[in-house]
Image (cartoon, rainbow, N blue to C red; front, top):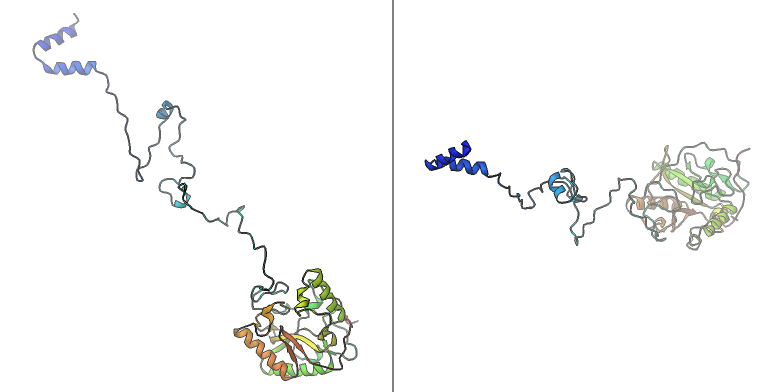
Length: 332
């Protein structure tokens, strides 16, 4: 009998209980470890699967720092990045700062009779209700007017002129026929009456800004052709464009009030040649209406007749005036 066994038997016989414990410990293996179980709730994080456990389950190991697609990591500052619960309606607004993300489409149709206040779709108005002052530019000398017409630059000292039809900066986008130079002529009687208007506004610390005066007949016809070609025949039907105009006779003028020196026009609510209801004389308020009334009062005091659809349009009736088609030409 081995000595260790003999010693144990003797110890048992002697009643040495610690030996029994030693025998049990020596013969028994390590106790099996029960798997731990953590209840998942909203506050306790899910323990990451170890490589051994995952391998034993037949699944590939997942790194502990990986996250489920669409689910924000614990402690995220962006709760809107979490996946929505099925059945919920959670629309996330588009981030317009990200390239490649489309923005809302523009409206495919704008009613023709409701242009944006203060801005005409056909006129160059960089700021609603605030027409920009004319940009200073070199003006080529204009040739002398024919007999029966007066040059307004000579008749109106201190007045400003911005003859847009001699440039592409007008509703047609091109220089109108007959405007090879930026001239402004009128018949003698209307020109004399307008000189009195200029004197009156100068006494009030203002000046006149002339946009157009006598207009060659060929220019009026070109306007009508442009409207028909552009699908804007309504401008003719509504009385904004005409085949024959008082401008052709040399007794009608388009103008506004401006500040002397800078030629900055007063706020009239719309730009010149705004083809819409906002250009009607009574369709304004505040300072714009006050300025329109002021202009009309001064013009009517000298015999000019206003046109209700265009606050800038005034005619001095001259029974002897006839339509002309004499072009503005540069000085020789």
